[in-house]
Image 1: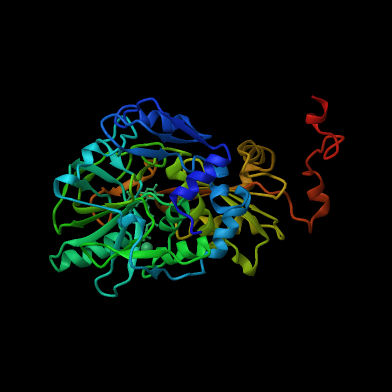
Image 2: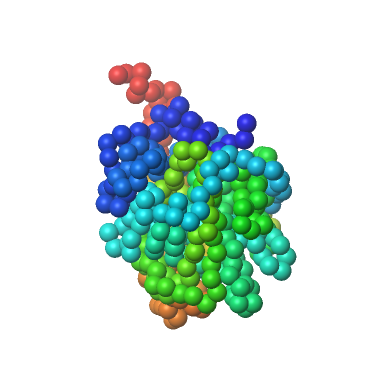
Length: 460
Ligand SMILES: Cc1cc2nc3c(=O)[nH]c(=O)nc-3n(C[C@H](O)[C@H](O)[C@H](O)COP(=O)(O)O)c2cc1C
Ligand SMILES: [Mn+2]
């Protein structure tokens, strides 16, 4: 059976990774803190203050172990797997109808103020739908695009939208040039692999639902929206059909973001006007909490890791690359590889700094005997396997991610030229390569006597 949000909830439940909360929870004043605290378990809310009839789920996934569960593998296997799938496409399939059409709402039947969109951070401008995947259609090619965009609730049928200048923004500009509203369909709630696909940095003109198909191993079934010819996943929980008027702007933000800061493109941003909603019967709302190492970050860590993995794997023709992990705050990356030549790790680190994603700023390269999923080991390698004067290379004047407040902001948010610039560092925390065996030997890690044979659990 195709995977969807319901099958995913079952997977979380069976593996003991879901907590049910029956006590009343106010999405405006309580849910953010609960989600931010629960780093091990997904939370399902059955009694939402001010939102009669709604159920919602957050932190699904809550951590990298949950991500492994969603992909059906260990967390260590996910990034190399996704890296390989990035070049594969399984085109989506049109179907006549699906569960997401069970309920159709329009006009006064839609009131976002009674939906369980939560206020995530204390300084956020208000409740925000953080789990909305925005489907658009390029008016020139007819090709669809899917991307995350935060939607700040601004009225019963209006939200704001932040469109960082990438594909959705490019498509919106095409509509604006023609003085036309851009039709959008927004999906809330599905299997996490859909969310992973939406956060991939694919070339313009690639439909992210074809990537979702490749990740799932089967085509995504899509139904036509009621009011436009945009196709959306047939077994999603909720679809909002809406339009973004041309040339209209409204104050939007701040919002708690992935770095654990509120630095986030706040300003005069476009609005989304809701025309229709279709849902499953008793739809389950999806809440995404933002901040460092929360659910929002997980949807960055995997696509970024995979993109960096592919970008660096052919530096110098071939890299014996083992894994890539995006570090907390998202501006850091750990690369695990077997250096074959002197200087190779540094080359690979530099490649990561100029990959398709703007975030990497602090790159640490380590050997395979350092477990990058255990952060203390990465910190150990930085202190125990570097001579800073030789192994730490700082390059200044590089393009930053505009949401990194450490960089100099040259152009403020609100325009297509929002930008920052600053320094970046490569830390080569690898030992000398095998071809220098005498030098390498000094860096051999200790193994305790009895390693791999004597286990604590047998003595308890
Ligand atoms: C949790 C999460 C929230 C995001 N929020 C936004 C957002 O509000 N605005 C935005 O422009 N991009 C946002 N992104 C980033 C885009 O989804 C991502 O860069 C995507 O690859 C862009 O799609 P595109 O390449 O089709 O433009 C978010 C990503 C994640 C994982
Ligand atoms: Mn795209």
